[in-house]
Image 1: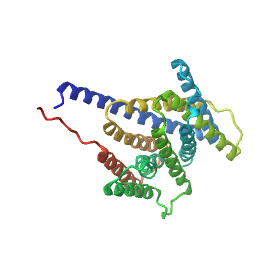
Image 2 (image 1 turned 120 degrees about the vertical axis):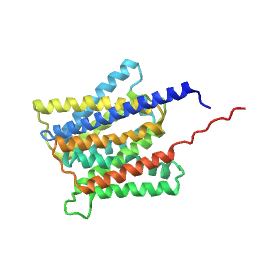
Image 3 (image 1 turned 90 degrees about the vertical axis):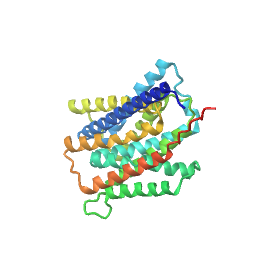
Length: 302
């Protein structure tokens, strides 16, 4: 039987992890809203590029403070794959934020855990039960419900969030294969280097010249960098505190924060298909996480 002290310690760790995860999701939602605000007066590529530079500088200073080698990660082929997926995910997700409703983009992103499980099955050979396969299919159907490809108000731009979702799922799978020796600062630094690359690609593709940001756009950009860095660090803290199966479901709190900001700040309408699709995605993801929870085993006293 587990000792009462061990149970209390585990409960405190889980509660701490839940708080870190919820804080991370709130800050990610604020990052998204501020990015969208800055992109309304600046070029999308310029905002992405400046955001990447700001975050990379912060994590580079963290590496120097911890006296960790800056260029060690580039010797790992897995890190190159991770950066490639990061570029795709960030580039298309930020474009989706700038060009489509914040609430819908945030809701589509919630299908990431479902796609990660699908990728782990296809590329890592993880065994998935029939019920999990059913949950994966249901989660993807939830994305289609939000997109409404057969509706009159469907926009091809909505697919930007889907491509970003695939990029983030690939990044998460590559992170799983990355050496554990890489710290949060190393992963964060190369993650923001990937954002810089994404910003350069978008800037070249759009052909828009760089313009000096206004006062409000500068504040929004600084806020984007601040909340983005803190959110990333809080997420890493959450994943290293408490049980993963207990902490991870609170990723879905980002949907609540994103919907609230989209509705109250940007005045985005919320139709029934949005609520239905969001409920389907969240339910399927929670079911998959619940099925992954290891069964508790207790030793019988001799």
